[in-house]
Length: 522
Image (cartoon, rainbow, N blue to C red):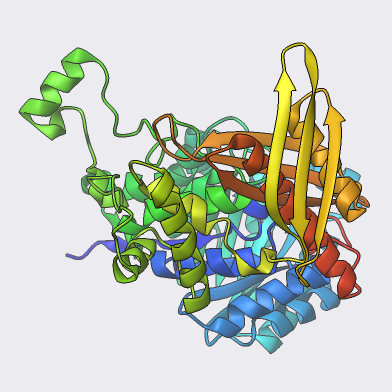
């Protein structure tokens, strides 16, 4: 007897993007959407089209690529939201409208100021309107885990009768615990007419660290769709982690007897891609995709591993896409080998991007003794052609010492090959570089966050810099990589400045990911 299938609903591009500092450009969202398609998720919640013109454009662009998964957009229970979702997702052969309204007593009293019957009428009206535009409708009662069970059953019953084919039960604030959530789902299965004819879904947040456990409890009690994000990113403490819940179902298949369509060998490359784009680095001890997940330092563990891997490994690194050797290419490697490795790492680049990345790879290979996957990933994250010009960094010289201020002298080249030389002094070299770049460009930024990571191992490893800045009340993020960490910081800061200047040229002042309304959460 074949196992039942669990649908994987990925909301990295909607709920995941709501994590502070995780806003993405259109090009970055498309790159992640392609990786999710290769991962073979069932549904991609591509965004909240009513949030901003940028969100609408991103959802539409993802839908229009039509790569296979169902493309979904989120809407509040109002006509404008629903129409915008439909306009954005209709380009995909398979598309879905996802409507939501809060149902818990605390939300009814303090946020919506609506009576129980008003909320049911709002949900029913929204679902019926959405059904006129689209056959595939999902409904979520926001804060379901804190909603009275009897009333929640009424809401779900009304949603099914109105035409919702999927009903999602969210633990919006990460409040529930597995045993309690199990009882909730079993109560709905026993008390809602027609519930076996629809897909029951679960969406958990990780405020108490139980998003994956609660999602698995819901699945054990009858849910057949899991809403999750790559690396568990999302609002506050994040969401249910896709790679963790998928590998839990696969590794403990004899217990759950449930399968997913996910190609697990794409998990690690996709996790690395999302981390690079969002700047949310993966903790070393993160389950499944963390650096330590398959590392064994204790002597007794190492001895057991040498005798048989299963003594201390319940999964194989290859199952999630980690190659046995991280040492990959050298300066004599050709373009074809480089292109194949880029694809293996989960990147979908066009010919122009491959050529640019290969040129940077050859330059770095002349300097570094050993080249690793991390070096290639760092290069690719910094050759996105949307970040080209109007300024490029030609040279950078730093003077600093323990008892003196730091001085940065830099030369920039514009699109017409004209040079601009500037020098700035500050307490430290990175600050001096940032001041010089601001003076050169005339763009004054407020630095919110600066992070530096090693792309690989060894003394000659590349440094990856990520900066998050504020400009006119909007957040921007930039990346840079170099063996010189100050140069990496300079490239990251310059990427942000270039993005702002390009948008100014197009007459756009707001951030490409800025929102006109508050983000929605379920």
